[in-house]
Length: 209
Ligand SMILES: [Cu+2]
Image (tube, rainbow, N blue to C red; front, top):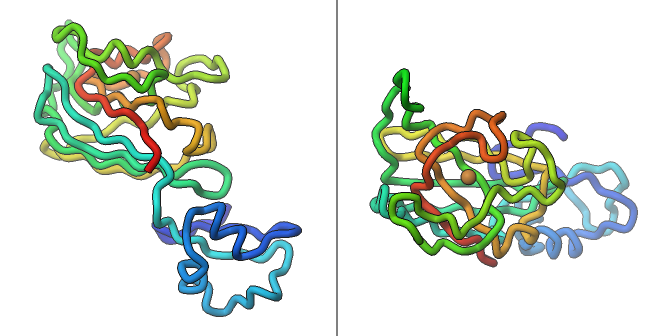
């Protein structure tokens, strides 16, 4: 994969590809493709040719809302269909202030952030909320750190976090009906099964966009 500006990715033309099919596959219009590929003649596509695909409409989305441990959290996660996997964008407000680790306690932030297996954000026990979301989404039974639902931690900037990243672990349609969870503590990417990332601050059900 070659590097492209944020908001655009490369699709390498394979046998049988047409611009119409690419527009369908990536949930954009033919005009969207033409706008970023002014030189490309749709009747003369060559195998191996690079076509720019603008990232426009997400396939799946989750509205994140804080639970009883941090009610002010609000955020959105979008899942875009890109070549070879999924582009995930997240924006969150209202995260708690950072607190360094002590001998007894993990640091508060950066925040563990994952896809969990069930699309259920019922609070349940207010001291230990969002257990109904289940464990990490781990369809291929990997060790923690390599779960399909393992994401980078969220860095808070005075309560605000924004991040985009690529994963080849799933396509956006596969996570519809699951949930995203933001935790109090960082993920250590080694403790089984959930990375020791502590209580669940916020939850969002992933829905079709
Ligand atoms: Cu989690």
